[in-house]
Image 1 (tube, helix red, strand yellow):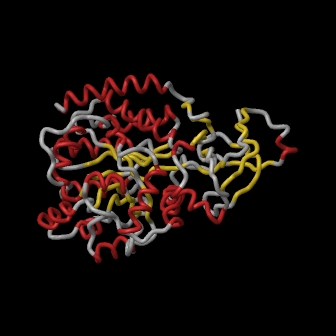
Image 2 (cartoon, rainbow, N blue to C red):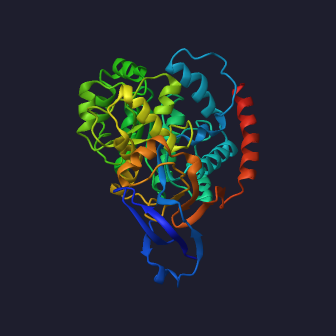
Image 3 (cartoon, helix red, strand yellow):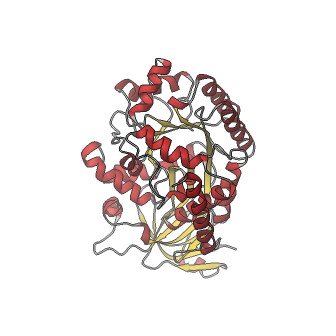
Length: 423
Protein backbone atom coordinates (compact mmCIF):
# COMPACT_ATOMS: atom_id res chain seq x y z
CA UNK A 1 0.00 0.00 0.00
CA UNK A 2 1.33 3.43 -0.94
CA UNK A 3 1.85 6.23 1.54
CA UNK A 4 0.76 9.74 0.63
CA UNK A 5 1.81 12.95 2.42
CA UNK A 6 -0.46 15.81 1.46
CA UNK A 7 0.09 19.54 2.06
CA UNK A 8 3.76 18.91 2.77
CA UNK A 9 6.30 21.67 3.26
CA UNK A 10 9.17 19.59 1.91
CA UNK A 11 12.72 20.53 2.90
CA UNK A 12 15.50 19.26 0.65
CA UNK A 13 18.13 18.13 3.16
CA UNK A 14 20.99 19.09 0.82
CA UNK A 15 19.95 22.50 -0.52
CA UNK A 16 17.57 23.45 2.33
CA UNK A 17 15.09 24.56 -0.30
CA UNK A 18 11.42 24.40 0.78
CA UNK A 19 8.73 23.16 -1.62
CA UNK A 20 4.97 23.18 -1.01
CA UNK A 21 3.84 19.87 -2.46
CA UNK A 22 2.16 16.51 -2.04
CA UNK A 23 4.44 13.49 -1.76
CA UNK A 24 3.86 9.94 -2.91
CA UNK A 25 6.30 7.71 -1.01
CA UNK A 26 7.50 4.49 -2.62
CA UNK A 27 7.79 1.42 -0.44
CA UNK A 28 10.86 -0.80 -0.27
CA UNK A 29 14.58 -0.42 0.36
CA UNK A 30 16.12 2.56 -1.47
CA UNK A 31 12.74 3.67 -2.81
CA UNK A 32 12.02 7.19 -3.97
CA UNK A 33 9.48 9.96 -3.51
CA UNK A 34 7.31 11.68 -6.12
CA UNK A 35 6.12 15.28 -6.07
CA UNK A 36 2.48 15.58 -7.10
CA UNK A 37 0.08 18.43 -7.69
CA UNK A 38 -3.43 18.46 -6.23
CA UNK A 39 -5.08 17.20 -9.45
CA UNK A 40 -2.90 14.09 -9.70
CA UNK A 41 -3.11 13.57 -5.95
CA UNK A 42 -6.89 13.24 -6.08
CA UNK A 43 -6.55 9.81 -7.69
CA UNK A 44 -4.04 8.34 -5.23
CA UNK A 45 -5.10 5.36 -3.11
CA UNK A 46 -3.41 4.40 0.11
CA UNK A 47 -2.75 5.79 3.58
CA UNK A 48 -2.88 9.58 3.69
CA UNK A 49 -1.17 11.81 6.25
CA UNK A 50 -2.02 15.50 6.29
CA UNK A 51 1.21 17.46 6.84
CA UNK A 52 -0.31 20.93 6.86
CA UNK A 53 1.96 23.23 8.88
CA UNK A 54 4.66 20.56 9.23
CA UNK A 55 8.16 20.22 7.77
CA UNK A 56 8.84 17.02 5.83
CA UNK A 57 12.47 16.14 5.21
CA UNK A 58 14.88 13.22 5.03
CA UNK A 59 15.09 11.25 8.26
CA UNK A 60 18.28 11.14 10.32
CA UNK A 61 21.03 8.55 10.81
CA UNK A 62 23.47 7.71 13.61
CA UNK A 63 27.12 7.57 12.54
CA UNK A 64 28.42 5.65 15.58
CA UNK A 65 26.31 3.90 18.21
CA UNK A 66 26.67 1.23 20.90
CA UNK A 67 23.25 -0.41 21.26
CA UNK A 68 24.68 -2.79 23.86
CA UNK A 69 24.87 0.10 26.35
CA UNK A 70 21.10 0.68 26.36
CA UNK A 71 20.56 -1.10 29.70
CA UNK A 72 23.19 0.98 31.48
CA UNK A 73 20.89 3.91 32.13
CA UNK A 74 20.34 4.36 35.86
CA UNK A 75 22.67 1.58 37.00
CA UNK A 76 24.69 2.02 40.17
CA UNK A 77 28.33 2.95 40.61
CA UNK A 78 31.08 0.45 39.73
CA UNK A 79 33.07 -1.43 42.39
CA UNK A 80 35.84 1.15 42.05
CA UNK A 81 35.47 4.79 41.17
CA UNK A 82 37.36 5.17 37.85
CA UNK A 83 40.25 7.60 38.01
CA UNK A 84 41.11 7.62 34.30
CA UNK A 85 39.81 6.47 30.92
CA UNK A 86 41.32 2.99 31.14
CA UNK A 87 39.54 2.43 34.46
CA UNK A 88 36.27 3.68 32.94
CA UNK A 89 36.64 0.95 30.34
CA UNK A 90 37.76 -1.70 32.83
CA UNK A 91 35.25 -1.12 35.63
CA UNK A 92 32.23 0.00 33.60
CA UNK A 93 32.07 -0.90 29.90
CA UNK A 94 34.27 -4.01 29.87
CA UNK A 95 32.38 -5.26 32.91
CA UNK A 96 29.04 -4.55 31.23
CA UNK A 97 29.83 -6.13 27.87
CA UNK A 98 31.13 -9.33 29.53
CA UNK A 99 27.79 -9.65 31.36
CA UNK A 100 25.58 -9.58 28.26
CA UNK A 101 23.62 -12.64 27.12
CA UNK A 102 21.18 -13.25 24.26
CA UNK A 103 18.15 -11.74 25.98
CA UNK A 104 20.05 -8.65 27.11
CA UNK A 105 21.47 -8.07 23.63
CA UNK A 106 18.01 -8.32 22.09
CA UNK A 107 16.44 -6.04 24.70
CA UNK A 108 19.21 -3.49 24.21
CA UNK A 109 18.80 -3.55 20.43
CA UNK A 110 15.01 -3.22 20.52
CA UNK A 111 15.18 -0.36 23.03
CA UNK A 112 17.83 1.41 20.94
CA UNK A 113 15.88 0.97 17.71
CA UNK A 114 12.75 2.44 19.30
CA UNK A 115 14.71 5.38 20.73
CA UNK A 116 16.25 6.05 17.31
CA UNK A 117 12.87 6.00 15.58
CA UNK A 118 11.31 8.35 18.14
CA UNK A 119 14.24 10.73 17.64
CA UNK A 120 13.88 10.71 13.85
CA UNK A 121 16.66 8.29 12.84
CA UNK A 122 15.97 5.40 10.45
CA UNK A 123 19.58 4.20 9.99
CA UNK A 124 22.14 3.20 12.62
CA UNK A 125 25.84 2.41 12.28
CA UNK A 126 26.51 0.29 15.37
CA UNK A 127 29.63 -1.08 17.08
CA UNK A 128 28.84 -4.13 19.24
CA UNK A 129 30.69 -6.03 21.99
CA UNK A 130 29.60 -9.03 24.08
CA UNK A 131 32.67 -11.23 24.80
CA UNK A 132 30.70 -13.94 26.60
CA UNK A 133 28.08 -14.17 23.83
CA UNK A 134 29.76 -13.58 20.47
CA UNK A 135 28.43 -16.15 17.93
CA UNK A 136 25.15 -14.93 16.44
CA UNK A 137 25.15 -11.65 18.37
CA UNK A 138 25.07 -9.46 15.24
CA UNK A 139 22.10 -11.34 13.82
CA UNK A 140 20.21 -10.77 17.09
CA UNK A 141 20.77 -7.03 16.76
CA UNK A 142 19.96 -7.01 13.05
CA UNK A 143 16.65 -8.84 13.56
CA UNK A 144 15.69 -6.48 16.41
CA UNK A 145 16.42 -3.42 14.29
CA UNK A 146 14.52 -4.95 11.36
CA UNK A 147 11.53 -5.61 13.61
CA UNK A 148 11.27 -1.93 14.54
CA UNK A 149 12.07 -0.78 11.01
CA UNK A 150 15.57 0.64 11.46
CA UNK A 151 18.17 0.02 8.74
CA UNK A 152 21.68 -0.70 9.93
CA UNK A 153 25.38 -1.23 9.36
CA UNK A 154 26.74 -3.45 12.14
CA UNK A 155 30.10 -4.75 13.27
CA UNK A 156 31.52 -6.79 16.13
CA UNK A 157 34.26 -5.18 18.25
CA UNK A 158 37.26 -7.47 17.67
CA UNK A 159 39.88 -7.20 20.41
CA UNK A 160 42.68 -9.19 22.03
CA UNK A 161 41.85 -7.95 25.52
CA UNK A 162 39.95 -11.12 26.49
CA UNK A 163 42.35 -13.68 25.04
CA UNK A 164 42.92 -15.47 21.74
CA UNK A 165 39.74 -17.56 21.90
CA UNK A 166 37.53 -14.47 22.06
CA UNK A 167 39.57 -12.84 19.32
CA UNK A 168 38.94 -15.77 16.99
CA UNK A 169 35.24 -15.80 17.88
CA UNK A 170 35.04 -12.09 17.01
CA UNK A 171 36.75 -12.66 13.67
CA UNK A 172 34.48 -15.61 12.89
CA UNK A 173 31.33 -13.71 13.88
CA UNK A 174 32.39 -10.90 11.57
CA UNK A 175 33.02 -13.28 8.66
CA UNK A 176 29.71 -15.11 9.20
CA UNK A 177 27.75 -11.89 9.32
CA UNK A 178 29.43 -10.25 6.32
CA UNK A 179 28.76 -13.36 4.25
CA UNK A 180 25.04 -12.49 4.14
CA UNK A 181 24.58 -8.92 5.43
CA UNK A 182 26.12 -5.51 4.79
CA UNK A 183 28.41 -4.51 7.64
CA UNK A 184 31.90 -3.45 8.68
CA UNK A 185 34.93 -5.02 10.36
CA UNK A 186 34.93 -3.70 13.92
CA UNK A 187 37.99 -3.20 16.09
CA UNK A 188 38.07 -1.84 19.63
CA UNK A 189 41.16 0.41 19.64
CA UNK A 190 44.76 0.04 18.57
CA UNK A 191 46.07 -0.60 22.09
CA UNK A 192 43.92 -3.76 22.47
CA UNK A 193 44.51 -5.16 18.97
CA UNK A 194 47.73 -7.07 18.30
CA UNK A 195 49.56 -7.31 14.99
CA UNK A 196 48.24 -10.77 14.07
CA UNK A 197 44.67 -9.70 14.78
CA UNK A 198 45.09 -6.47 12.85
CA UNK A 199 46.32 -8.45 9.84
CA UNK A 200 43.40 -10.91 10.07
CA UNK A 201 40.94 -8.00 10.28
CA UNK A 202 42.55 -6.41 7.21
CA UNK A 203 42.15 -9.71 5.37
CA UNK A 204 38.42 -9.71 6.21
CA UNK A 205 38.06 -6.17 4.89
CA UNK A 206 39.64 -7.23 1.61
CA UNK A 207 37.68 -10.48 1.36
CA UNK A 208 34.29 -8.86 1.88
CA UNK A 209 35.09 -5.49 0.25
CA UNK A 210 34.25 -3.85 3.55
CA UNK A 211 35.77 -1.15 5.76
CA UNK A 212 37.00 -0.84 9.33
CA UNK A 213 35.05 0.67 12.21
CA UNK A 214 37.54 1.46 14.98
CA UNK A 215 38.01 3.72 18.00
CA UNK A 216 40.98 6.04 17.33
CA UNK A 217 42.79 8.08 19.99
CA UNK A 218 39.65 8.55 22.07
CA UNK A 219 42.02 9.09 24.98
CA UNK A 220 45.74 9.77 25.09
CA UNK A 221 46.10 6.30 26.67
CA UNK A 222 45.52 4.75 23.22
CA UNK A 223 48.44 6.73 21.78
CA UNK A 224 50.70 6.05 24.77
CA UNK A 225 50.28 2.27 24.85
CA UNK A 226 50.31 1.90 21.05
CA UNK A 227 53.64 3.71 20.83
CA UNK A 228 55.06 1.65 23.70
CA UNK A 229 53.98 -1.64 22.13
CA UNK A 230 54.56 -0.99 18.45
CA UNK A 231 56.83 2.05 18.17
CA UNK A 232 54.25 3.88 16.08
CA UNK A 233 51.44 6.33 16.62
CA UNK A 234 47.89 4.99 16.32
CA UNK A 235 47.28 6.39 12.83
CA UNK A 236 50.73 5.37 11.59
CA UNK A 237 49.92 1.82 12.64
CA UNK A 238 46.48 1.88 11.05
CA UNK A 239 47.98 3.27 7.84
CA UNK A 240 50.42 0.35 7.74
CA UNK A 241 47.52 -2.13 7.71
CA UNK A 242 45.50 -0.27 5.07
CA UNK A 243 42.83 0.94 7.48
CA UNK A 244 42.81 4.39 5.88
CA UNK A 245 42.48 3.15 2.30
CA UNK A 246 38.76 2.42 2.20
CA UNK A 247 36.03 5.07 2.01
CA UNK A 248 33.97 2.62 4.08
CA UNK A 249 36.33 2.99 7.06
CA UNK A 250 35.06 4.89 10.12
CA UNK A 251 37.50 6.35 12.65
CA UNK A 252 35.62 7.11 15.86
CA UNK A 253 36.71 10.04 18.07
CA UNK A 254 40.21 11.11 16.82
CA UNK A 255 40.75 13.47 19.76
CA UNK A 256 44.46 13.01 20.48
CA UNK A 257 46.18 12.98 17.10
CA UNK A 258 49.48 14.58 16.21
CA UNK A 259 49.71 17.00 13.29
CA UNK A 260 51.22 14.22 11.15
CA UNK A 261 48.40 11.84 12.05
CA UNK A 262 45.84 14.48 11.12
CA UNK A 263 47.57 14.87 7.78
CA UNK A 264 47.34 11.13 7.16
CA UNK A 265 43.62 11.15 8.01
CA UNK A 266 42.95 14.27 5.94
CA UNK A 267 44.61 12.75 2.88
CA UNK A 268 42.95 9.35 3.28
CA UNK A 269 39.58 7.95 2.19
CA UNK A 270 38.43 7.28 5.76
CA UNK A 271 35.63 9.07 7.60
CA UNK A 272 35.87 10.54 11.10
CA UNK A 273 32.91 10.41 13.48
CA UNK A 274 32.60 12.93 16.30
CA UNK A 275 30.88 11.93 19.58
CA UNK A 276 30.66 15.04 21.77
CA UNK A 277 28.36 13.78 24.54
CA UNK A 278 30.43 10.66 25.18
CA UNK A 279 33.68 12.64 25.17
CA UNK A 280 32.27 14.92 27.84
CA UNK A 281 31.02 12.01 29.92
CA UNK A 282 34.37 10.21 29.81
CA UNK A 283 36.47 13.35 30.38
CA UNK A 284 38.71 12.48 27.44
CA UNK A 285 38.98 15.88 25.76
CA UNK A 286 37.38 17.95 23.04
CA UNK A 287 37.07 17.38 19.30
CA UNK A 288 38.90 19.75 16.96
CA UNK A 289 38.11 19.35 13.27
CA UNK A 290 40.87 21.65 12.07
CA UNK A 291 43.35 19.82 9.82
CA UNK A 292 41.17 16.69 9.73
CA UNK A 293 39.41 17.49 6.47
CA UNK A 294 35.69 17.50 5.67
CA UNK A 295 34.73 13.83 5.91
CA UNK A 296 33.32 14.27 9.42
CA UNK A 297 30.01 12.91 10.64
CA UNK A 298 28.33 12.62 14.02
CA UNK A 299 27.51 9.78 16.41
CA UNK A 300 26.06 9.23 19.87
CA UNK A 301 28.56 6.55 21.02
CA UNK A 302 25.81 4.80 22.99
CA UNK A 303 25.07 7.78 25.23
CA UNK A 304 21.59 8.21 23.71
CA UNK A 305 19.94 8.06 20.28
CA UNK A 306 19.12 11.73 19.70
CA UNK A 307 21.11 13.02 16.74
CA UNK A 308 19.68 16.55 16.99
CA UNK A 309 21.05 16.77 20.53
CA UNK A 310 24.42 15.48 19.32
CA UNK A 311 24.67 18.10 16.58
CA UNK A 312 23.75 20.90 18.95
CA UNK A 313 26.32 19.69 21.47
CA UNK A 314 28.97 19.62 18.74
CA UNK A 315 28.11 23.18 17.80
CA UNK A 316 28.12 24.68 21.29
CA UNK A 317 31.31 22.89 22.36
CA UNK A 318 32.86 23.91 19.08
CA UNK A 319 32.53 27.58 19.90
CA UNK A 320 35.49 27.11 22.25
CA UNK A 321 37.34 24.02 21.02
CA UNK A 322 36.61 23.70 17.30
CA UNK A 323 36.01 25.61 14.10
CA UNK A 324 32.27 25.20 13.49
CA UNK A 325 29.24 27.33 12.66
CA UNK A 326 25.55 26.51 12.26
CA UNK A 327 26.00 25.50 8.62
CA UNK A 328 28.91 23.14 9.28
CA UNK A 329 27.11 21.67 12.31
CA UNK A 330 24.17 20.80 10.06
CA UNK A 331 26.56 19.47 7.40
CA UNK A 332 28.24 17.11 9.87
CA UNK A 333 24.77 15.98 10.98
CA UNK A 334 23.90 15.09 7.36
CA UNK A 335 27.31 13.76 6.23
CA UNK A 336 26.36 10.23 7.29
CA UNK A 337 24.04 10.08 4.27
CA UNK A 338 26.97 10.94 2.02
CA UNK A 339 29.02 8.18 3.63
CA UNK A 340 26.25 5.64 3.04
CA UNK A 341 25.57 6.83 -0.51
CA UNK A 342 29.12 6.81 -1.89
CA UNK A 343 29.71 3.35 -0.45
CA UNK A 344 26.47 1.91 -1.89
CA UNK A 345 25.02 0.80 1.45
CA UNK A 346 21.29 0.14 1.26
CA UNK A 347 18.53 1.38 3.53
CA UNK A 348 18.97 5.16 3.37
CA UNK A 349 16.96 5.96 0.26
CA UNK A 350 14.87 9.06 -0.38
CA UNK A 351 11.81 7.28 1.04
CA UNK A 352 13.21 7.67 4.56
CA UNK A 353 11.44 10.72 5.90
CA UNK A 354 10.63 12.56 9.09
CA UNK A 355 7.66 14.87 9.67
CA UNK A 356 8.52 17.66 12.09
CA UNK A 357 5.87 19.51 14.04
CA UNK A 358 8.19 22.44 14.70
CA UNK A 359 6.43 25.45 16.19
CA UNK A 360 8.60 28.53 15.79
CA UNK A 361 7.85 32.10 16.91
CA UNK A 362 9.95 33.31 13.96
CA UNK A 363 9.93 32.59 10.21
CA UNK A 364 11.61 29.41 9.00
CA UNK A 365 13.16 29.59 5.54
CA UNK A 366 16.09 28.30 3.52
CA UNK A 367 18.43 31.07 4.62
CA UNK A 368 17.95 30.51 8.36
CA UNK A 369 17.03 26.82 8.70
CA UNK A 370 20.50 25.87 9.98
CA UNK A 371 20.03 28.42 12.76
CA UNK A 372 16.65 26.92 13.66
CA UNK A 373 18.24 23.47 13.58
CA UNK A 374 20.89 24.44 16.14
CA UNK A 375 18.87 26.77 18.37
CA UNK A 376 15.30 25.53 18.12
CA UNK A 377 14.68 22.01 16.82
CA UNK A 378 14.24 19.16 19.31
CA UNK A 379 13.61 15.42 19.10
CA UNK A 380 10.17 16.09 20.61
CA UNK A 381 9.29 17.85 17.33
CA UNK A 382 9.41 14.48 15.54
CA UNK A 383 5.79 13.51 14.86
CA UNK A 384 5.95 10.85 12.12
CA UNK A 385 8.84 8.74 10.79
CA UNK A 386 8.92 6.78 7.54
CA UNK A 387 11.56 4.10 7.00
CA UNK A 388 12.02 2.58 3.54
CA UNK A 389 8.56 3.85 2.67
CA UNK A 390 6.89 2.34 5.75
CA UNK A 391 5.34 4.41 8.52
CA UNK A 392 7.13 3.24 11.69
CA UNK A 393 6.24 6.20 13.95
CA UNK A 394 2.81 7.81 13.75
CA UNK A 395 1.87 10.67 16.04
CA UNK A 396 4.92 9.79 18.17
CA UNK A 397 3.71 6.19 18.60
CA UNK A 398 5.75 3.20 17.38
CA UNK A 399 3.68 1.32 14.79
CA UNK A 400 5.82 -1.77 14.24
CA UNK A 401 6.18 -3.23 17.74
CA UNK A 402 4.59 -2.98 21.18
CA UNK A 403 6.77 -0.42 22.96
CA UNK A 404 5.33 -1.21 26.38
CA UNK A 405 6.25 -4.88 26.02
CA UNK A 406 9.79 -3.91 25.00
CA UNK A 407 10.13 -1.56 27.97
CA UNK A 408 8.90 -4.21 30.40
CA UNK A 409 11.35 -6.79 29.04
CA UNK A 410 14.20 -4.26 29.01
CA UNK A 411 13.63 -3.35 32.65
CA UNK A 412 13.73 -7.02 33.62
CA UNK A 413 16.91 -7.62 31.63
CA UNK A 414 18.53 -4.50 33.06
CA UNK A 415 18.08 -5.82 36.59
CA UNK A 416 19.67 -9.13 35.60
CA UNK A 417 22.54 -7.28 33.95
CA UNK A 418 23.18 -5.11 37.01
CA UNK A 419 23.18 -8.18 39.25
CA UNK A 420 25.74 -9.85 37.02
CA UNK A 421 27.86 -6.73 37.15
CA UNK A 422 27.35 -6.62 40.95
CA UNK A 423 26.33 -2.99 40.76
